[in-house]
Image: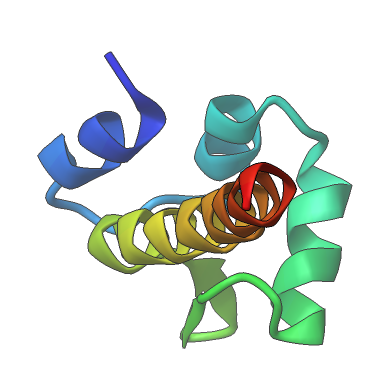
Length: 79
């Protein structure tokens, strides 16, 4: 099962540790990404939480950015 599908199946806000585990990174890395605004997050009573649907959308956008340049490069090579 793809990570996006796992996130879409979740209905409750995720904690930092859960997101870190899903992404195979440290909780500190997740905190830094959230603080920089590079990862969509929420603050609830001082705690950082993540909407799984927003994370799924964020991952899809990242996938599209990674796929598009590769596709364009192959087109220019074959043209």
